[in-house]
Picture (tube, helix red, strand yellow):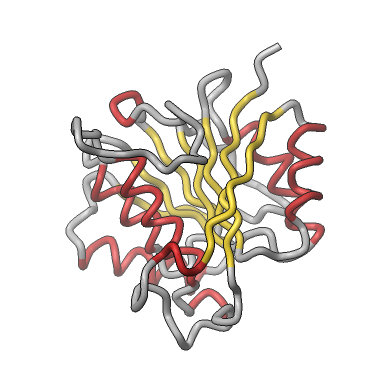
Length: 207
């Protein structure tokens, strides 16, 4: 079961969420390449996770922003049950829930989220096309943002181009494996050979 693995991209995404959603102190330093003021944590009321899998990133967001409503989505009923169990285990029922979302044939209408997140969701060309199109409607108009982490697959440029076609602004920051720190990433991960990760910062393009 692909969803049942704790992918390294989810760890990288969770670490970035921890950095972006934590109210900075005077001593906090932002990463040099990270877009400045990409997210204002105090303005985020809704978060939606794509392809939640084991739910690490979504649970991280729900923990960091207890006043925000976080929805973990997936097409797999088993994945959603696993995520629901994790929500209960971590006592996050008040602000975290699950919902079915099939990127290729979405049947449910979602209220646009202030922040859309996803880890290792750009694994097929058709998935890249579906997500680039979905982001435009899943992100809150004008102010909505998306944060997508990918283990340096071959679809990065295609995703960037499709975002632009959908009138979205996108910036890619490359994070080297060595920057994450020793012992953080899983050695049993199928992506253990991945040497770097793409972090995509997506927003609506302002004309």
